[in-house]
Length: 280
Length: 248
Image (cartoon, rainbow over all chains, first blue to last red; front, side, top):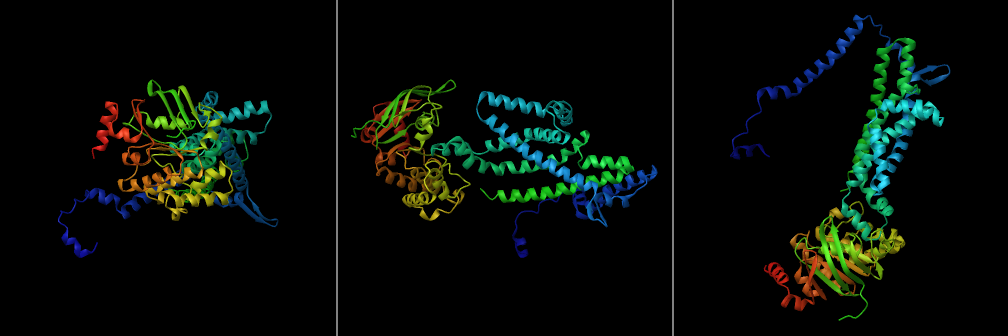
């Protein structure tokens, strides 16, 4: 719109929002408020730590991340823990996806028994706290089926997340229009063919956003297996703290490492989403 | 009239949705190459009737035989039989994640196990038949409603079926696109394929129908050849219905 055209408007100018709103939402004021809050938190924790005579030893941290000695470059304990976290969560996620598909198809199958079995499974998993599931899989099922703590943690995380994943899959499959089923049937496709060529390709765009959220959730909830001493990031952090008493530095560092990994995952996830929203 | 064994036979068919009776005591026959047009007010069961023919709905009582095979829920023959029955829907139901060409070839390739090359040759032939050969590489969402419905018709032609079912194929179209679809349907009618159409397009019906059927409240009220059907329908309800839709 050219400026000269402004004069041709016949309507009165719309009333401005109240001055207090304009003041609070202006950029400099927002920035000041933000800095005050963050600074306040940092300052008070620093102050509090000083008051309790906390001995900050940040210089100790890098060796837990990597070291460079005569033997060459080596990853530190925390990085080894992170690697376990990553392999643990990805194995558990793949397994969870498989169980999730099974449960979702059972529920959608229309088989009376299949649907009931799936619902019982879902209700059980969803209504038991994750921590209790961990204990159940390690202390009860572990001795019964003779598996180690690493396997227990994978199974537990997989089962817990498969319940959530199966609901995502079911919702995504249901979100595909009923007419697609009818069209596929009318050209003679079997149920399996219809899922494979028509329904699943279309439901991917419905399942991707919540599914990427589930990946992030999985990485975060993997920390809970530290209660059965699986050597992942959180457990190793605890071990280092009990050796060195550097609770503040280590927990800050671990939080940052998780955050770093999850931010990377989220960026990857939004890339994948972009790719799949092209379909109309 | 044609004297061959009927390709579709309804014998005293009833269909219930819970307590609601959608079809009651339907008995009718369609002969090979016959072109039947079914009309009637909405909720009269005409869509249900046509959807029973390829097993998208299952009837509760009576007998339904299509191409010599009895149809019932869970029948193993239905999937094979559906290859012989093309269907065109009110809402087109094209596969939005596939191009026009893929929409047409996926049935022949995956179901009939035709080679990809052959399927594409056939698909292009039928796209020509529905007058949109140039749209093969596009996605359905890039086409107008009329073009989408013509793709849907080509898709069912690609299965080289014996029977074509049309379930209100022009009801979801903008008025200016109705004729392009009807023209294609008139051309199809001349090829000798068996057609069962649910439609309110009476001009089309007059042009192509061998048999007119009027339904109301789940029953078949009147069956007649078009000249008799439009000039002197026997039942009062049918007369009333025709007056209402022919008024404009």
